[in-house]
Length: 258
Ligand code: IPE
Ligand code: IPE
Ligand code: MG
Image (cartoon, rainbow, N blue to C red; front, side, top):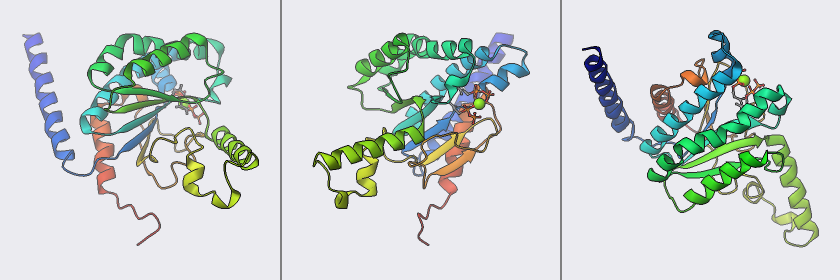
């Protein structure tokens, strides 16, 4: 009886979700959504669990969020998974986080392939443990011919370092004659960033109640719409993503015009 009731409730919930998705799809969908997935540690603390339990729970939310983003027709989903500053954390936590890509992709890669998702990564690869990089590169290789949602992990990513590196490459190209200083535009500069192949995010989401960027896509977010929520990342649900997109659809973007 209880099981039947549960089944009925699930089906009913998912049909409500379906209707909502269809309704939202009638208005323009943000092409590129970026998410600062924050609050895993606090989620665990509230339950007297170790912080890594929060990261594990957060991984499941990545799956749900990816599937819904794909259903909605979002083209790129960039997820901030680890910042260049996160190395400051205790070694056991960092080690655990560096194992998550293997665990996530080990479990969900077939589903991502089946759903035509392309896996990408932006960030400094050199400092990543070999096993972490191997898992991501395998996923990138196996999904490279897919043309659905791009699931872009920002892993060991830091925006200031990214900008400084772009400046260095620009100077280098000016010295070796590939680029003339007079030809440098905002658009050309963007092509030196790790996001060269993506449009700027239309919508930025940050969970956990912190209202800051924490060194995330400083250049790219210049005209993005921001949506903040107190919900901790492991509690982030399909409904929250739909709410963020609905709010986005009601915003009036002016880009400095009237
Ligand atoms: C976000 O959750 C995940 C990473 C930064 C890797 P946190 O681990 O920052 O969780 P809080 O902010 O401490 O709750
Ligand atoms: C930002 O969260 C980085 C990621 C979500 C990966 P942090 O938890 O590191 O940010 P701060 O330290 O609160 O600014
Ligand atoms: Mg945090």
